[in-house]
View 1 (cartoon, rainbow, N blue to C red):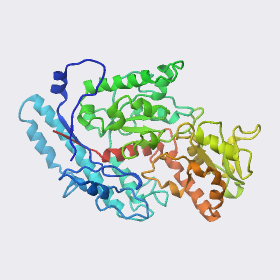
View 2 (cartoon, rainbow, N blue to C red; view 1 turned 90 degrees about the horizontal axis):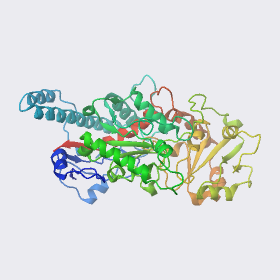
View 3 (cartoon, rainbow, N blue to C red; view 1 turned 120 degrees about the vertical axis):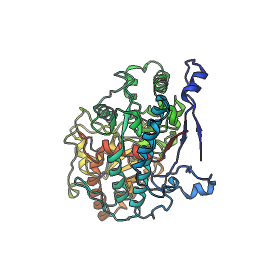
View 4 (spheres, one colour; view 1 turned 135 degrees about the vertical axis):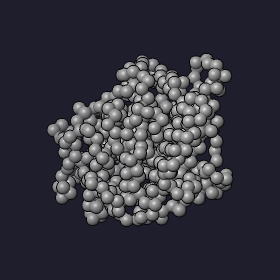
Length: 501
């Protein structure tokens, strides 16, 4: 068991230590890192029971949403130690009886504790249900659903994912802090390359899905600042990349919400999340240690070499919506009319693109690589005429070309060494994409030519199937990009146990 003593979020503002001690030393956080993630990602496991050895921890580095070829984990969620996961309605009566005793302050505190216990019981029940569902290795979910039944090898475990998604829909609630004013907070751009960030912020503000206005009912807490808007309104473009003003805004914001509300200090940020599609999102988060190390960071720039932690952070799709359009995004030519083996067009933007352009630009008619698309040729026609679409990282690992390829029904070729693709705790990217290490760029044609026509057709069908999970619908529809993003946050919350001391 790992216990965290509560400490106040540090800031330059001088405040009384005694006041903070009286106000905030109330909680204990037990972070139980039961791995819900892809098998190649790991996280430490902390149990309620006796301390475990490092060998025990290593044995439990397993996944709940497994690849089809893997056996289900016998230890998944074992740290709950529940004989029965069912919620006991009688507990509410016990809490009510307790509330009737003591002072009003004690009654209020007991009521809040009761709500937190209920949240943790709902999470324990969900963990149990997902664990049981993961034991079914069918390619098609056995659960009923009027809208969509996950099936096929695009999922690591279709049944486990479906059960997890349905459990999320039943109970998951998000509290959005109301502090802060637009344009820096509660607001975002819904067009161009950072559209997904703005669309998520604006959807949470509308409150149509998952949002609660009672923080005691919340499973997670959303910090609604926009890094894109911070760059637009706070960043000084003549400052030689000085990001201190952006980081200090975020630092002051967390200071504010930690004074006004008990929740940040209760969990030391573990049940809070931020979301950013800007390249600087990870850097801005580093100005607050607990935000960087503890909180759930939903990032387009999901770079493991720069501090992205798949066990707690979420990879977020980057989609370029030039005018904010959300219709007419998908479609492409049938495989028989895709005459180009591989295609890429893009400016020199980082080392990986330099290698790609240097190796393949104007070198081969099968692998068509352009720094500038020729006049009179449509970029999107090229996408829709190609079997494989090359998606190299730029200065940062994320690229809107991945989702562009999926929308164009072109098998994406991810060229990166440290990128975690979106929803990879649920989706089996190997079934519908090709991942090429940077050092293999000279061998791209050989790698793609080595994929049989039969295998290519299977992958292309799966690309069409996976489109629904990346659609930026307005309003959101079940299983689309918005709901899949929330589901990724839900999975990270399942890894955490919070209790009052």
